[in-house]
Length: 215
Image 1: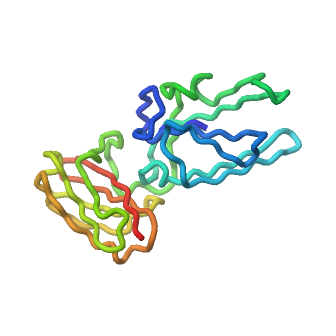
Image 2 (image 1 turned 120 degrees about the vertical axis):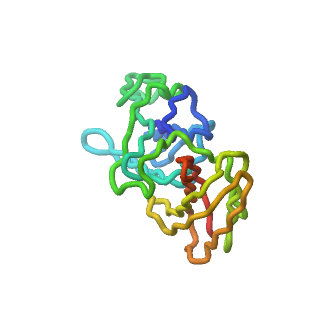
Image 3 (image 1 turned 45 degrees about the vertical axis):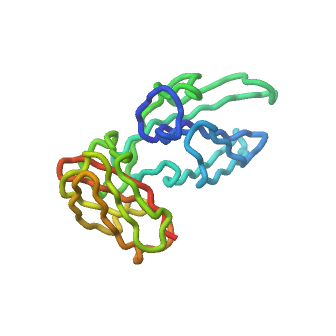
């Protein structure tokens, strides 16, 4: 399975673009292998089951691996491939859902997978334009307050701040005014332990999404 989290299709797999390749091997059964130069995969489970007419595979991939909140309309690069080896040595045949035999190294030909379900807590935004580099969360992980610090001249207006859980559900909402290099403090005392996403949406449409861990 090939995943390109930000759907940039820039040609290479990288952690910065939330890309990964996941492989299930019939010999190793339930052992899942993840591409080394992709995003680190720490939240997953997988099962391989032989059937009367072949096999069945189920893979669960946690959204926390990809550092964004899922929701209706989110599109990611995605494809599925199968290597057949009747003798257990080499490859006899190959099939792919979308793309070609080079999907393992070239993500430009991956298909588009659009998520269904509940809508985003923020709608109408270009999900490819994020200003994450201009926002710092600290301390992170936190067990109490967390500071949001903006840098540069990106966030210079009033903004809405959403905190969502890993399902994309909005947990808390507040507003703040930013002026370039600014710091805003949020109280996370009401949040249970887990992974959250802090979404900052300014009045001029600029957005950043940062992962927050509450201990």
